[in-house]
Image (spheres, each protein chain N blue to C red):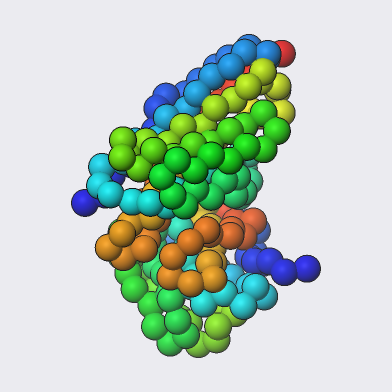
Length: 112
Length: 111
C-alpha cells in the first residue's frame, strides 16, 4: 500500500540530546513537509522540500535540521538548540509544490 | 500575508442537530482543504475545494467555497457521535503554494 511512514511513533529524549525522526513515502511525491503540533493547537511548518537536495525553512525552523538526499525520504533532526521540543511531529507529502497534503501517523517526542 | 480564521474554535452539540463551521481567509486564493483529526491521531483529508462555488459532500458533511467572500463552510447535518473530532481548514497561498492552517475547531457531539 502507498503511504507515508513515520518512525518512531513515540520517542523520549533527555535534554541536550539530538534526535532524528524518520519519514519515508512511497507515493512518488515530489514535495515533503514537517509540521509541529502542540497540545490543543494547530499546525506549524518547520521545513519543507519541493525537490531532492533542496529544502526551505518554514515558520519555526530554529533548532531543527533536515535533509532530502532521496525523493522518498525526509528525516528531521531535533537538535539540542530546540528549547521546547516536546510535541507531536507530523510529516506530509504532496505530488507537487501545491495541492492536497497526505500525512503520516505522526511521531510524539517527549523530553524528560 | 495570508491569515486563516476558523470559528468557532470549540463546539459542543447534541446528536441530530445541524451546525456550520466557518473558515475565513484574508487574501485571494482558489484552493482550500478540510481535514479531520481524531485525538492523538494524524490528519485525514476530507475535502479539496479548488474553485469558486465548489461544493463537496460526504455523508453528513458538506463543504463549500466562496472565493469572492473568502469563506468556506463545513456543514454538519444530523450530527452523530462519530463525527466528534477536530476539523482544520487550510488555504493555499497564491504566492508560494504553501498551506496556511486555521487553528482548528474541536467538535464534541453528545449522545
